[in-house]
Image 1 (cartoon, rainbow, N blue to C red):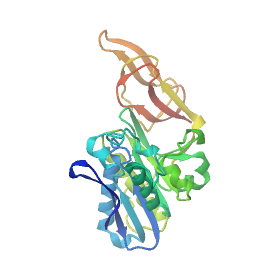
Image 2 (cartoon, rainbow, N blue to C red):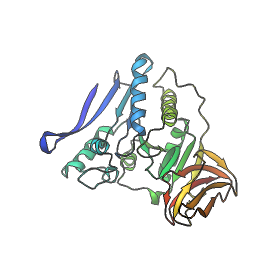
Image 3 (cartoon, helix red, strand yellow):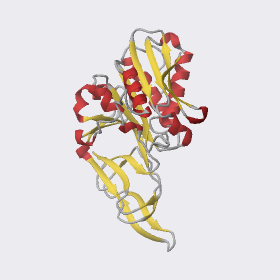
Image 4 (spheres, rainbow, N blue to C red):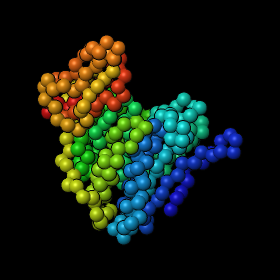
Length: 307
């Protein structure tokens, strides 16, 4: 059942509509999947499609309700912009919204009110166009005890627990967790692209999680979910560029590296010179790698969880 949770008239006869697909027979537990907060993050579009498709094929195995919100920022998706066009706003910086505020603040308020009370919300994001991320769940350290056991049931290979100081209070996840509605943030892939393999792994993980919640009694996918690595923020090595140039690498995120392993090189195309060799400082799990090749001194090249 398609429902509209926020609708506003726009100039020239257009309309802003934020909609959800409610799948199930009501009652039981309620799982909400939200994405499209940033218009340049598209992995969630395939995730929502696959969830709706697979649920529709075997509704008898669903004991509860799944609500799918594919586009919290439909204007951003339509225009390939990260924020909200014409407002110069990052939608994930205005939650929990304001019922008496601007059009976008009212929409944010309607989203939070609609999600409140769910047994679990999964907020799906991609990375930006500069970095590629292995599928991961990100959790505020203040919610560690409550949310890490839930995240571990998803079979996502990496769980990153952030220091509270790095978590913005104006995000959807923080706003929901502050009200007692548990919300997991999933980050994966790269901006403006869809990685089919990563999306399929996440969808399998969601069905595995639903099975653990007692909501799903059907197929959870072909692959045995891995035991996730749980990382605290102080065990992450950040690799930053020592020169400006073009970054070349053969590595993909999600691999193990050893001290001294070559992560990539920063080169000067005009002279054919290697300006800097980017090497791993430790034994660890490479969960972030630079995707956009043009770099400047100080640009983030990679993140490694120190094993």
